Amino acid sequence: MKKIVLLLAGMIANMVFIFAQDLHSPAEIMKIMEESELTYSIAELTEEIPVPDNSSNLNYNNVYKYDSAGNVLISVYNISEEAEQIAIEAESFFSKGKTKEAREKYLEALEKDPGYYSVMTYIGQTYGIEEDYNSAKEWYKKVIEKNYIDYMAHWFLADIYIKTGEKKLAVMEITIANILNRNNPRIRFAMENIYKKNRLKVPDWVFNPQCRITFDDIDEVTIEYSNEWLGYSLYKAVWSYEPGYRSSMGIVSEFTSTLEEKECLVGLITNISINKKSKKKPVFKALNKALDNQMIDEFILYEILLPQYPYVAYQLPEEAIKLVVEYVVQVRGGKKMKFE
Image (cartoon, rainbow, N blue to C red; front, side):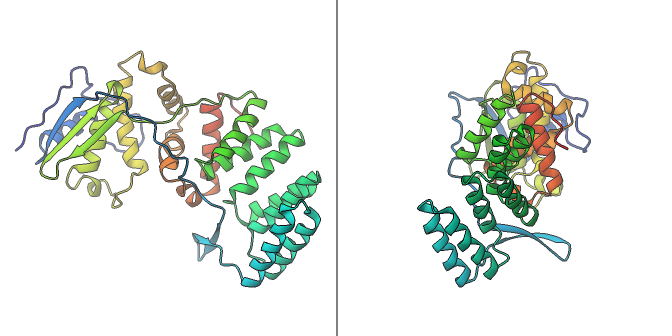
């Protein structure tokens, strides 16, 4: 049996579980590592891990969601050639500022292919440019009813709400747009402006674990960590490399999961709970606030999963997206808001 090399002074061996699920405690994770056929070794990071650049990791407005025999599916638009050609003509008019002519063509394209939902967003745009805000709202709402994941419709509807003085609704719609396309910088910019008009905070931080885990392809896992991230990194190492661990937790995919991140957060919270300085850092303040408000799932989705896998947002039910909206507004924005 290989020995684990650990320098864990101050690590809490046991803790009261803060999540409803049956997750492993730090003591259990350490036991798994100690009894492993692998050798785990740890060392402090010598330099800070930079924030990942997800600016090119974007969703595109070329898909729609639909129900098939009770299953929610996502499909790429398959537009008829005739409707697509008419839409191209509409774009030409639109680029020249001829909104009325563009709208007529968009309507013609929609008539040829009623499932061309995204063209309805462009119809709304033509009305918005003409300052016919009621008609613009009507069309954006039609799009959202047909295809809730059309982030452009939510984005442009938020802009209309700001112009008509409906600031709370603007917050809701721009936040939905941001969730549906987490890394889009233009949506982020619009969101910051709308949040400021509602006196909401727009903190500039990202969830960026200060740990690096490597495997030598034989039997040794090396864990490099910084300060508060030791517990998180131990869980992550076990999830990443311990033979059979993922499947024992009911996870077959190699991608990170909500369950995996929940366990890793147990290790993180263990560390920051004994380090008073850590609690003042924005990421840890947000984590504690999410914990206090029972928003851990939403924290994981918004802060961890969606920046890496923005397409996951398209798979979420509307109810789940609205819960993430509440998380973003309350935890990141710093204010409770009722949208109904």
